[in-house]
Length: 126
Image (cartoon, rainbow, N blue to C red; front, side, top):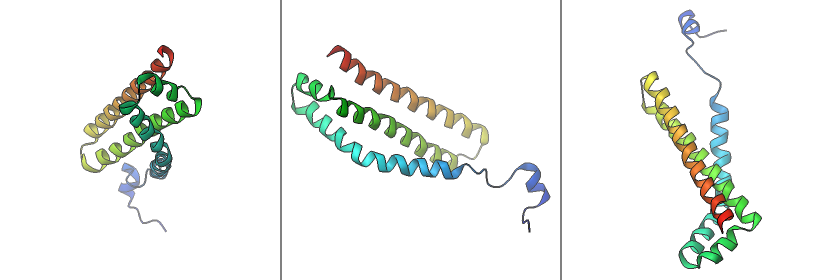
């Protein structure tokens, strides 16, 4: 038995069937950020207390580099997903909503690329 009116069928009201993957990716990135944040805290501690060469030596370790890069990718993706949910919940106009989501996604992509370039530039220069 269908509970939707013919008008709702025509204008496409109802589930878009894309929320589950969005929800899961938020949870997966949140869980991944828990252990990866320990690497970030260690990196920040070294950055503030140790000499530059010691911090760079720590960062050149393949495991440490991989974890910092994974943290950058996960945190910016997680943030973009979260801000997208806020935009979808609180902006009523579809046009403004689409523009805001695109702008936020592009902004977080540029920030993630800048952070990755900074890490790899530090590895190449040092």
